[in-house]
Length: 318
Ligand code: UDP
Ligand code: MG
Image 1 (cartoon, protein in one colour):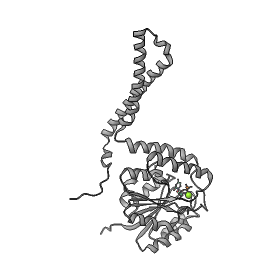
Image 2 (cartoon, protein in one colour):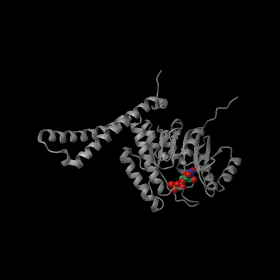
Image 3 (cartoon, rainbow, N blue to C red):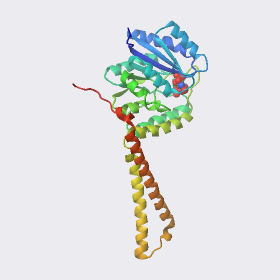
Image 4 (cartoon, helix red, strand yellow):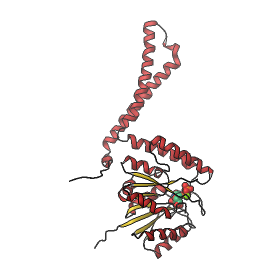
């Protein structure tokens, strides 16, 4: 008989060179989970660690059959780790947290409570101070700018401590790559899921090193443009490119027209306005190109059947 694998809670933890943290986090986590009186599993994703992390995880796996370990062949990053974890996990609720003891397992019941209230995704909010300045400033900026651009009122979108209903996590698994894991709530929002946030503690890192420096934020910002574009305009690229293209063509075209009217009716040489003339011709060329890109985009969307599931059905009454 094939046993249907399922449990109440899966905790997903990406770890990359966290040998000193693994043995410390496990007992704390187990303590909290045991108290809940539910079935659970802990899924570690070893993201290509080069230290002793995998051995530590194997040891946990040997002593506790609720510990599962996915080991990547090399360092693929957090998006890949989450995607693998989401696909593998069998819990009705899926919790993600970091493996460096910066998230406090004691906060897990808070996340579960919000899910129980009927939310599909619960995002932790580390409202207390952050780590070193080099990171707290970019992260403060990130947290200020993102809500403005996305019109989404989440304080700490990138907080690793989150809770997902199973179907939400399964759905998101196919959508994350690069640095996009930072924007999971945004992707979820655009799919119409109910999202709530809850304040969680922010503990300092004691062992091992942070894997993220300031440079990641640039990559992160470029991915942000991707997500903004993909979530707003994937199905209608012509709206995006065409609007810019049309405005540019219209302004450029009008100026060129005015210059020629001047020439034919008043004999004023177009050459007198050379810089303006050049600029408006450029605007026309630029505009036509943008419209063409938009049309090409529309053709790609037409061909790409992968978008067939780009909606979320909540209920069907039959
Ligand atoms: N991590 C990972 N793959 C990476 C980088 C980080 O799995 O390529 C893990 C890391 O081991 C930790 C979590 O992701 O459990 C958060 O990383 P880190 O603490 O370095 O980030 P920070 O908290 O400094 O933003
Ligand atoms: Mg950390």
